[in-house]
Length: 455
Image 1 (cartoon, one colour):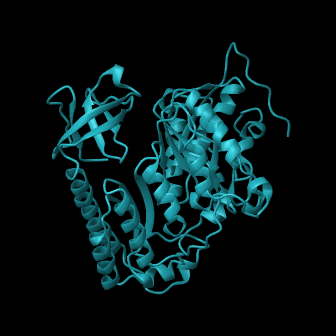
Image 2 (cartoon, helix red, strand yellow; image 1 turned 180 degrees about the horizontal axis):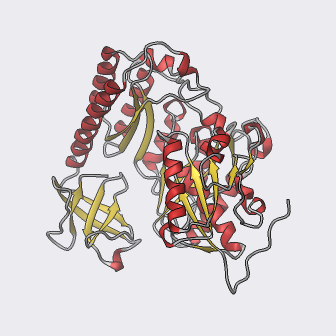
């Protein structure tokens, strides 16, 4: 199909983007947005109305269909005649279901989403949505992506897809096999990001520890994530590199040791656990057991006692008894970690977990989630409390709410200060004074801030 002519500069068509899900989705949405800008379109905020709405979906979050429908409805409230395109993981997995949502005009799968400009045609709504959705095996190329628009931070995609077969996960079905960019290309992207004035880069992907697979279309792995980390550490103009999430079995000693000695890679790891019992980890088809996970946490803390460690955990997985959950709770409680991301298990089509016995009732899943959320806040508060009275560099962001702005220390302590436009995208050393129970943050002296309790 021929790409449509770019809109005239006299009356550029307006396009608005909405992203559901992970940092990887945000990096890809931003990249697609740049393609539209280069073609002469005007990017607008969602509520301002647009000629075209692009919704980038996620299959990991619960109620993906419900969320997609709601965003479509809100888009058409803002612009009743708008052309609506739906892309992303959910669009790959459930294209027919999405095409039946009233108001949707185009559904693109994983192999087609970066060619959205070629597929939107005359941007005229039709009675029936078009579906362009190849088999996920067609999504075999790596498409470089990074987020733009935030002066402080950029999400840089370094890897896509996954070769793992976790029994609860649909990501391999939505994104295909593991594949990566080359180190040279990623370094060039990081240099471009640095030239734009961004000071922090977050490395993103589906399974970034698996970096090196699928480069140049091949399966042979000649480079690894450690090689990428070493190369990026030399990039001038970026003050901070942050590793978004890495599997415990792929987080090697050499990576931990390098981060401990690096001036650019910050002391912050997010390490998925999913369960604190070997029984459930086996049912989940995870590639490690609890002893390895505990070893990774111990190794990090031995080298970086101040390091922030985040944990993903799933509650209510099939076969998880009350005793199993309490074992998970005890395991996490005894770990020197800083916060949790708690996910309530939800059934996914075409996953092995659907065939497992021992379904956990929804009310029990909710109760286990509640308990771990409370534990997470205790862990976070304890971690923050360990740093009270210390001095730390904070990179301030441009948000402003109720006259306050936020920033983060290298080890991911969130602080708030009175809004000052001169602080935006600036690194300032401040004294961490007090955790505010109310969530409100005050400054008692010019160089002092309160730690904000909530992330």
